[in-house]
Image (cartoon, rainbow over all chains, first blue to last red; front, side, top):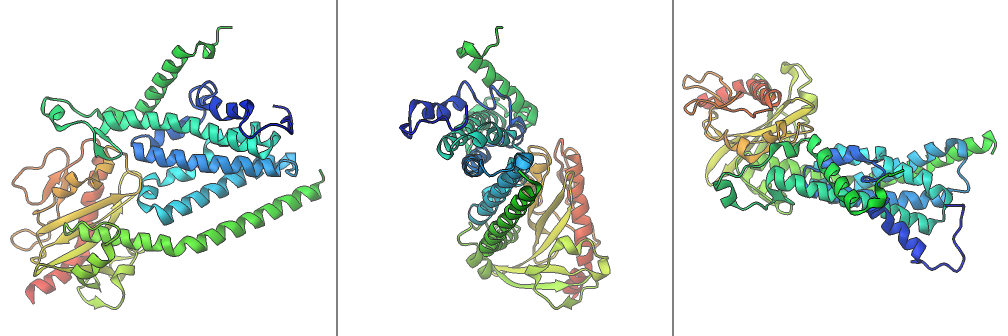
Length: 219
Length: 230
């Protein structure tokens, strides 16, 4: 990723730009492969709905943060660049939090402190530092959206299994039919606790590496 | 890059960010406050088992809640808007200085009294509303909520199955002595009108509810006494 390497003739969705969007979903996934942002995966995946809102919020924050830092990249004094990045992220997170409180109050109550914790999501600062600081706004935007989506789908997958097996519901609606409980099925309370999120992520990582042998370090 | 540039850059950034954020906060404030008011109305209504959704909560609240008053611990009514009393401030005060809000509802000819409560759980504050029937002793319904209790454990106090246990329980015994409902560890005896089942794995939160009920309801007893004898 050299400084501004994009050719002037490059189209908006060239192969290279599309890769920025799709690579973080699979072989460069921030959670499964880089093992970043695990803390929030443990905290907010008890229910599918909170996972979904968190994923959307992170997509918004990361897309904008990457673009803003990319636009500012030539002016940011290198000595205080981390502070500048943090200020941009924190401001965006506060904005997201205020908007959620004003327009989707019930969901903002469920997410409570976790929206604020987006600030500490290491994926966001990681992408600002590794990508947006050295690239033009458009590729930075794609990189931000791609990585946030890569984070988001893992969040949704974990949320899906935890809510289904932990509470027997999906998005708050009963998903496991009543007769299952009649014949002795019980919700697994352990799924609600954070350790099961870690184990679920572990299983996702296992399946992914089984399918994509390149991810296994054989050197 | 010179120090002068770094200082200039940092100052400009901070000023811009401050303007953007304070602008957004000021613009969104009315919407957010309205949401909080509506939520409070929904909670008050659910303490007497009326479920109103967000869109109609204000209208339903006005229809059923006929008056709201503030009393003190000696049972005298004091001036003020009960809806605006913030229990966060009140529970820090000495009982003698406390403003005690009370909401009075009229549903199908029956009178209900709703007492707001606030206390502490395991990780943070817990709060709720307790609806009383016209005898001021029998519980019509309860609504609890919390800031940060453990999901699946202490957080279950906000679950309907926990709240439903309070219906029909009593906060005074037959001799009108104050005897609030306790949340007991394990299963409460079925014929005990002053106890409900605790939450397994949520003992500290359960105890928090017990304390909140005792300390929150105690100051109201003189006012209840007054109404009962009048």
